[in-house]
Image (cartoon, rainbow, N blue to C red; front, side):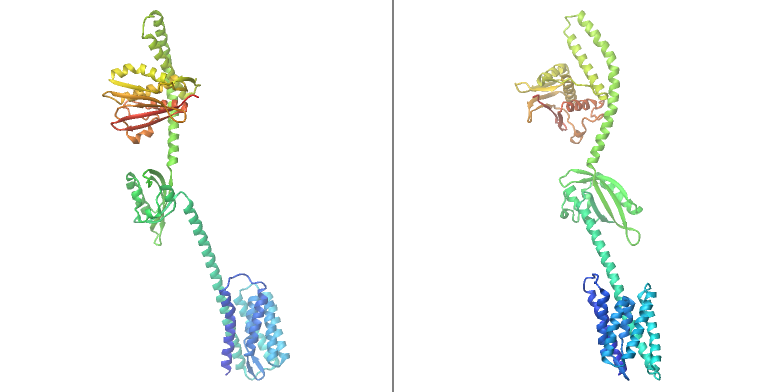
Length: 540
């Protein structure tokens, strides 16, 4: 019967220890205000229930109320402990007599616990439980000896202390398990929150960057593509699903790229490569990719991350910078050559002028002097490449400049069996320009057209007014034509399609037209000829 009462008391004790821990697990772990007060009251209430089911033996009541007091003192301190102990004492006085002994025993134990707590407050709760239980055993032995309680039956006291030990041990084990699970749950919740925040940040970056982020495995199967593929290359996610990435890499770059990837897996080191991606509309986009292998559990790389960036604009900037450097070199070279040409040119011009005075009937003297003056103008333009000079702009009829240029080139037309056809509107077309510079442009362009027609043919020259107050001069030849992919490079210094050319003629033409706020466009097909269109603003 005594054993049965022990089991009942112990079961009630375990139930009331577990109950708040379980309830706490299902609610949000927010701090509870005045937690010591509420826990002290709760523990005191269920000690009352323990006292009601206490074991009665020869006028004394035995139960686990002091196990509760020990745990409350160990985990929450004297404030909660006194509340629990006070309620336990009231319950004890209510159900049984011997008030004097009960009051003295309870006060001695709680005062001892309070004093002990001052010295052990900083150690772990488990150690505090052990010290409090040891103090309780000492107080219990002192209490039994003082009041001569069952001195002739020590086995009963041993059983009771073991009963208390089991209760305290189970209660401490349950509380510590909850605390550790709570701490683990908090750490896991914190980790999950950080992972979610990190994932959210990475998703935010991946979905809003213009860099192309790709994850591929060793077989080059795509595992992930960032949404930026749609903005940069025009492909929807469904278009890329199951696609071999090499399909949209330029055929000339595929071998190089795959070799680089293979080498990256062998060396386990990141690499930087440049190649071309095909846009969905067909154009090629130059990209720079940083490929980084991701190591698996066995240290070898299982897949890799590739971050690619559109560098088309950067390439254009580099080309512009390179062209600028070439122009600088050309300017210095041209200035030196022009300076050397001017000396003999001055001498030749002087003797021609003397010859004109002595032979006034010569019909070619004026033409020679005009051409020598044009050569002087050309050398001045070469000097302007190295040292810009003021340009004298005047209002002239562009038709007069074209006709004058054709008169100069007529002998070469005859020699090469080439005919020209000039068409224009009846009304004059006035522009503001430096006429000798424009004449130089027309001579260069028409001579290029003539040199492209080895077997003769016709050159069509047309002048018309375009939109937005513009004058359009088109020169169409019947020559060998120029490959379409080479047209963008026309006008670069030292870039030429002629065997003995320098590329400086078209470069100077571009420079002159740009100074006149105009533009030059090329249309050409191989073996069909070339069309050059010059656009110049009409004078107001």
